[in-house]
Image (cartoon, rainbow, N blue to C red; front, side):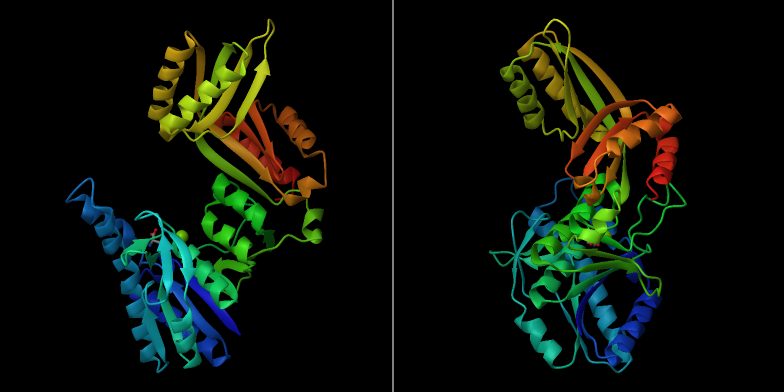
Length: 400
Ligand code: ASP
Ligand code: MG
């Protein structure tokens, strides 16, 4: 069986760990697996490389930065290949370029355009284990590019798509949990989750896997396994949604800390006003998330929205412009809110989730300030002091 495996930075953080992975690969090879192995840079190497650049200039040339950052993964592929050779097993290391990974877009945030897997296929046919540097490729100009932080997941899933096989992502957690175990120690591991749910969970801050990699998996139908490196414990499968899954209404709960809730009060209710406001926010580069509006007596409008609190400067800039353009606007800002989101494809066919949440909040005396929904999720902005109680009560109510 052919498989692409990816080992993250912590998993290859020391020489000892690299040797242990090599040993496991030898064992898997004996069992007849055809292996393509994508690795990250060792431990915090990428951060260290960034710091080195930063000690020379605050604005490194992006092309040069990409060359520097791509070095981390190249160290790992060489060491892992040597370790395999020590076990007497044929293996070969390939940079992103050598593995045929072609990218497009800007340096340090490039996207994979296509993969020419001829070389990988050739080495597999020779019976070798192929070790590929994650997070990198080569662009139209023939320059080395990187895929953005955490990009090795994307390298692995893209390679699996081009080689027509499954992808296994090995990391330092046991899989995907219904709730972040740091916030709820009784959280249950999820055996199977759909791409859609995983995408919402990633962007909602579950953080185990890169969102782009999951998107790619969905697009090309690559089943993705996420589990702990060198552990027998069963992890999580990310797959196409199926009807069985829909029986469980809620799959996971996402927590996003540090959001700002802004309310613009008693606006004149015209489409131009609203569009001016969002244009100002968009042009300042504020990432708006939840939006709601309420009509107030006398025909006015209250408009609320949330954004991450590290964008406070951008928000202030936009609010200044809004005040200038719309005249005196009453602004209310609540810093440091927390967003709690429930995610589940079962919501499409089971009504009543919102009602159940409201009941839990009422019982617990938890106030919420904003609610938004998508097809498969519902999110609440709450006061951070209520977060722990909300997470525990909801996790229990929905058996997460
Ligand atoms: N080494 C890169 C990073 O630290 C890519 C990755 O690990 O996925 O972001
Ligand atoms: Mg990662």
